[in-house]
Image (cartoon, rainbow, N blue to C red):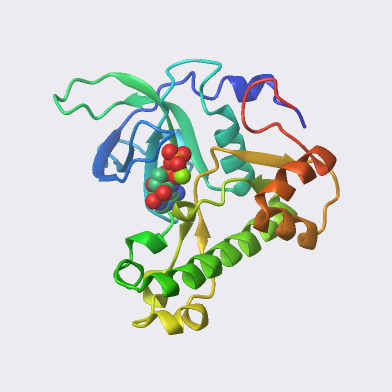
Length: 231
Ligand SMILES: Nc1ncnc2c1ncn2[C@@H]1O[C@H](COP(=O)(O)OP(=O)(O)O)[C@@H](O)[C@H]1O
Ligand SMILES: [Mg+2]
């Protein structure tokens, strides 16, 4: 699958009826993420596609126009079943002036990043390493499974992109690996499409070893989700 014409038009339309909630912590590669809701007045906008199961987020693009728009992220989220819509929506300026800017609307995943837990913050240095390794391992299990199931390989295993269920965070560092069983993956800004039959084990190993991941990518995947005309 290459990056087709339809993929290049995903930010053209304007999405109406959005109200903004709480701002989510900003990442490096976006211009702000907000919780959103859709105004109850009038019929539901068609782009909402019925009633989504989860809360929604709007992630604003740093770039205003092509080729810097996150086309690949839209494609990866769609393949993952996490995309709600993409288009231009009013940027929540502090002065309230509406200004339409490209954004991706996606489902919100629940959980907390390891570094944002008090358990991690107050843990002695020698306890932090094993906790980080455990989260990385859980991320890579999920990444490998998603690559098998959805053909999307999430190549960004920064710990900030793995959300731990709040109720699994234990009271003591020594209980961490027993207690935390799975993480939710976020941030498909640097995802790849799996183009060749690749086993769970290969995908898992590639995820655990970043160097290997890049090497493996040459062999097994074509880059298509990160930008226009890249393959
Ligand atoms: N779908 C989501 N559900 C819940 N939280 C999210 C989601 N997407 C992003 N976040 C939160 O916002 C932070 C920054 O978003 P991210 O997509 O990682 O941005 P960047 O591409 O700039 O790294 C994440 O680390 C996470 O805390
Ligand atoms: Mg990120």
